[in-house]
Image 1: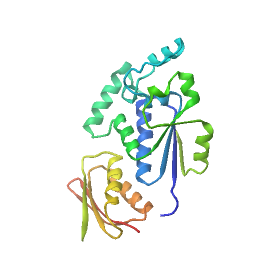
Image 2: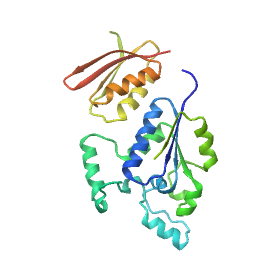
Image 3: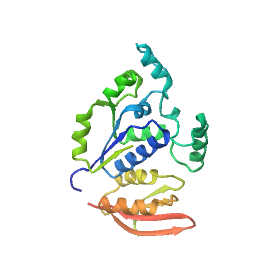
Image 4: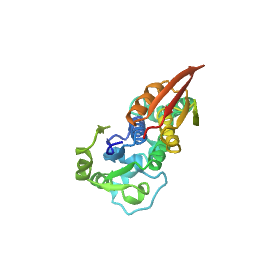
Length: 159
Length: 76
């Protein structure tokens, strides 16, 4: 095969269903032997949060943000029919029935497939998220790093 | 047909059949044949496209009682 193709996905959304779509495409692209990168920015960063409470020094606003946002992929809401948290329970039941992979498993598989998981540092600052609170073995970057990948990317998506 | 390896991807949903196929393909040599069983409705379109993109040859497909069977010959 010729030179490696690239898939770049920006995950802006913090919705469980949208993140699932992003991670399914990413894992599929990795199976296509693409070099795959998911840039997590704004609410999408929550997909990378560890689910335990990590003690870090924070200001008042950052603490509030941290409390109000979902701690980890499994706690994210869905974009439609969330019904104050009942929606995700329903969708997870349906997913189990159809053998669809839950989001935390998709993220784990993405790491197994050597997909680059990147956290946008500027929005980490805005939301008050620190490296200690995010998954291990991820990368940190900004817009230039994204563009460098995107300009010779074959698939570029914003979710 | 001389099948080198068989992959059971039945019951698995997208994107698992393709992810598992890719992994299984790594274990065989060029020219050898991988047999795949899947129940995902999208598997036919997915595996056909995947084989083409990766330079592999989809030799044969078959549907048997809701199970899709594929034979893919690994490319160079």
